[in-house]
Amino acid sequence: MEDPPEPEPAAAAAAAAASPQRDVEPSPPPPQPRLLRLRCAVQHYEWGRRGSASLVARLADEDPDPARPYAELWMGTHPSAPSTLLGGGGELLRDWLARNPDALGPAVAARWGGDLPFLFKVLSVAKALSIQAHPDKELAEVLHALRPSTYKDDNHKPEMAIAITEFRALCGFASIEELKDILKTVPEVEGLVGHEDAGKLMNMKEYDGGNQVKSNLQSAFAKLMTASKDMVSEAVTKLTSRLNIESKIRTLTDKEQLILSLEKQYQQDVGVLAALFFNYVKLSPGEALYIGANEPHAYLSGECIECMATSDNVVRAGLTPKYIDVQTLCSMLTYKQAFPEILRGVPVQPHVRRYTPPFDEFEVDCCLVPPGELVVISPVPGPSIFLVMTGEGELQADSLSAGEKAKEGLG
Image (cartoon, rainbow, N blue to C red; front, side):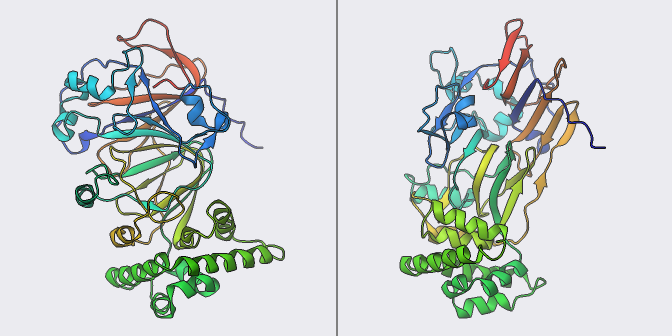
């Protein structure tokens, strides 16, 4: 017999928190936490889900325009879309923290100054985001100094995405064996890479030295990404035409189906071909992946919670109408070949799972509260943002009125 389905939770919530305790001396017990309601900003990027189909629109407590994309909900202090205090006359959270520095806790303030070290988001993805990477701290400082209008932050941006729905992404370079298979079976890619660079990749072994693999892969990938628009257009047209014909006599692979989907979204874009170089990742709800500095990735579809260091630096090179910086992206990547680690959260108390990436700026707790149950959220030595994803319940805290309701969208 199949196991009975788990009961629907009365409420589901996520909380992002700074995690300085991994690298600092033990701190004294945190003071009694103070809860502030936030009004958080929506980003209407073109790739977002439209109207009420977007979780972002529902969480933002807006009357959604069915024709308008609601792509990201930002919770934090980043100046591009800062949160404000609800009922606080529109005061910025950042300004409130400047007036109340003790709210950050001594460990966070000592390491990251008087600001939140993380940016918390919800994403509703209808079409693919750009092929991109986020620079490490050293490169971020250089790019910000050189082009501050494009690269607005001097901070790195490691990030983690936790799937709310089925979620699809490209992340990191595929294995050598998979790349060899691409070059053998996709002549349109081999033609753009060139016979010499394709030959070097074909002759590589899994146990070849890392520097040699990186050099060969970087050279081949750069050749693809810098091919002329006419050559790319011809290659994409040939590949998609061939796949459409072959789909009538055989079942296409997941990546081949992805190629056809991407080409409909971004016609004759080099990113359609570049997608073949990356791992195709499928996350089920509750699964997560983290992305370090200088790692290529692109979110494709679905909805997720995302948390990152406070930065909005993005180096793009395909699948986007925005500014692209192919030279910087090709030079900055690590060219590591490994399927990303999938996190499923670690139970830390009843009904609460914790997602801890290998970064110090943040970790995320996800809480599923069954009907009639009580969950006590343990205090942490730093700031947290608490978001009710679905359902409703009651909040109890010294800084709140008795019986205050928690409902979808509370931040």
